Image (cartoon, helix red, strand yellow):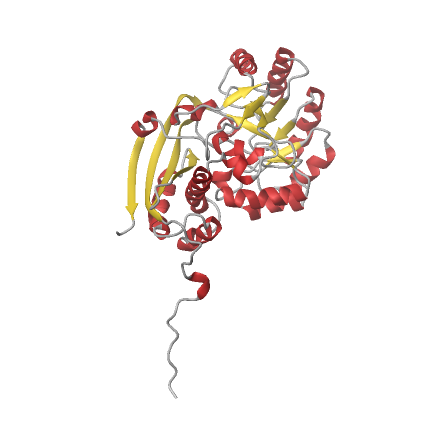
Length: 393
């Protein structure tokens, strides 16, 4: 007897009554944000990188057959922007015709569409822009800010400024920048350290602490430029300043080194921004390598992955301070159970028509649905490449 192949679609894959909408169009944009001044941190002073002059953004705009829209973005500094855009162009068509509500399913589909290049790094950073757009679409369709859709624990989040304290900035200007940030309502100040001369870092930090006073939350960021012995010596020297944290004192993947340092210092250790997957962050969590974890949703694959990591971090009772992309991270931090921080960068403001409200040391979740952002005409003008995909009618 000859058997007949089963050609029916498995029930789990059939479109049912719960499928209410479908993705009809996708637009990709490669946008380059110019920086007014070349930016340097410790990686530049140690010769590992050149000053940063621009930031490459991958924007994804998704539209559905029912007329709903969502926007998401990822980014790259110094290198990788063209690669993200190229990968996004390859995988975007796989979303056409899909139900935009099935975000976790679509994340997996996008990852498998580019599986040969892995599940971290540039590939998942491209996926992140789609994922963020889908979450924005879902919240917008629900008429809720994303934080409320996720389930907010608070309507505002403590915020600190980073963009005023880079190492290319003279100390006197850093002091002026700190005053301006505090006057704007920002709650804390972070400055860059990790210069080849550690004494120069200490002098600079002492000037900032004296200028802002003992009650202002102050953080430092070494951008991975210390070895273990230097981090230990500098960590001890920094204790007197009452810092909220020491950020990236060691190589991002040195979980054991970070764990030993965190155990030996009174000052909390923060790290995680350079990691590009949940699995990489889990190495930090399982080694107790960070008092404060600093994931970046666009770097680890988007909001879907960030929520997985947030659950792991909460289980370990680790504090949260997401890196960069405040337009996204404000919502995610607002939904984290333990009181978090969010990073303020004024660099990104020209990209969007809206502004985030800051007062009393906190960044406030607006009543606007979704992420609450729309691309500005300036962002359109900075676009170097676009690609559109539409479902067949």
